[in-house]
Image 1 (cartoon, rainbow, N blue to C red):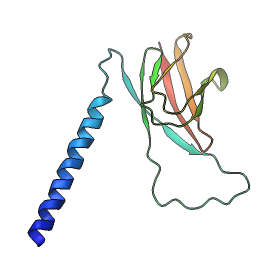
Image 2: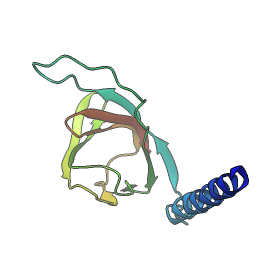
Image 3: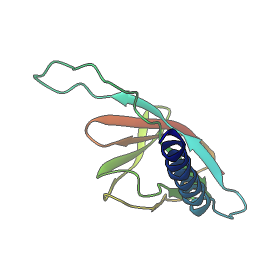
Image 4: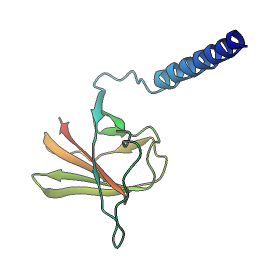
Length: 130
């Protein structure tokens, strides 16, 4: 009985591992200037409620950037995207749920702060526009 249980567990684990490798392979884009961006997460406190402790940490999303295109991989709901230059708002757009790509307008080269707000969290990072 133990051998059968062990072999079934191993079989399930091998299927899970192979599926995870396939998912990661689909998001690896072959673009010349592609950069992975890791986002910091800031929680927006809900109004009129007490914050409940979380059971697990929030999974930090990773997005991609190439030229003036952000690759979101469909991992967000509706959100507002902000591009800030020294704290001043340069660009704002609403991104629909499940969007894979967002085209940013052409700006002068420099380092900008990218913020994405979904109402519960603010995902932020610095991005260099060339």
